[in-house]
Length: 196
Image 1 (cartoon, rainbow, N blue to C red):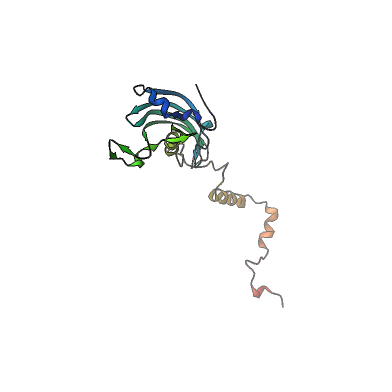
Image 2: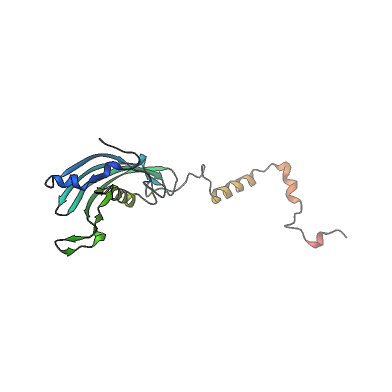
C-alpha cells in the first residue's frame, strides 16, 4: 500500500503509462492522506481517505469511477459535544485534454477535469477529485441527534439558568444582612430625602 501523508503523490498517474495498456482497467485500493480536509468544525480524521477506484482509458479520455470513504469528527452545533461519522461516496469523473475535442465535436470543458503537466509529462491527478468529493460531503453544522437539547446547563450555564440561581439565592439570604436591604441607594434616592 503506497501512501503519502502530505502531498497526495500516490494520486498522480502518468498518462503515457495508462495508455500503454488502454484495454486494462487500473485498480487503486489503498489509503491516501491529504491535508486540510475540514469545513466548519468537521474534519477528516488524520486526513485519511480510503480509495477503491478504477481508472480506464476511453479513446482520448480517462474515466475514473469507484468508491472513496473516510471517517470524520467534529462538534455538535447544539451541545458542543464530540460527534463523528463515516463518509461513503461514489465518484464518476472524466479527465481529458484541455482542448476539449472528441471526434471533432466540442465538449464543455467544465464537465471534465483537465490533464495536468508535471515535468513536461501529462498526468491524471486525482487529488482534486478526492478532495472536492470529501469536502462537499462533510457536514457543515454537525448534529449528534435531532433530539439534542443543547448544552448541559450545569457545565454551560445560560442567562436563564443564571437568573434562576440568583432568585434562589435571594430566598436563602442570611437574615443578619437584611438591614442592608433598607439602606437607600442611588436607585431609590429622591431629593426629598435630603436633610436641610
